[in-house]
Length: 311
Image: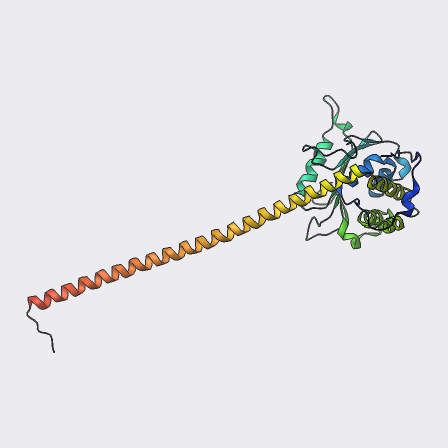
């Protein structure tokens, strides 16, 4: 696959994508495609980061991808994470990930990723040397149902007056389906536009969203090249199938768990009913025995006193 550098220099990029029409085989909401596009195209990554972090693209001089994978090579079992781990300007660590499926653990998972990147000091380094870190998640679900938001940045702050403890520890959440809640600042820096690019399903829509933006256009070119690479498409579709399979297994487990809970409740109800019936039978048996004892006592009295019953 052809690579685009952080400086934006392009070596004989084929403009055939300009004539591409119709549905996109695999778009950037596929976490593997997202990873490959921005891993291979640092120029596009620079544009995305400048938008999300609200910085001048020209301030990004270097980008080092620290967990590169070879495009089109099948994913090993250990390669379950589709995030991009990068260092910007030799001083800021970044973790980016596209996550469409809600596994119910993003709040803690993203925090764990962030903490691992933050704890990057070598033995003997002064703590003042700790580098700023950003965990950036593009989510296909609402993280907090009672607090939906398009783009949120979480930091460590004072609970009383919101005073920032440190600006070197940042967790950014961008919810793809909350674009209508984009703030003026989100729109100013083009975060909503990047989200529309990720969600576009046709080449026509992609090119329309990307027009007059060199970084987005560069990303679309990379996505076109990736969609032309049958090996990349194969791995991307394998990834989709894996996620579908995992989702089916989770739904099936949830269904069976719910069914088991229902059966357990029914068994508990039947058990309670059986206990009630057993208790009732015991009471009836005791009442019957008492009645039989009373009849026997009365018969004895009648017999002993030669009492003749009225006819």
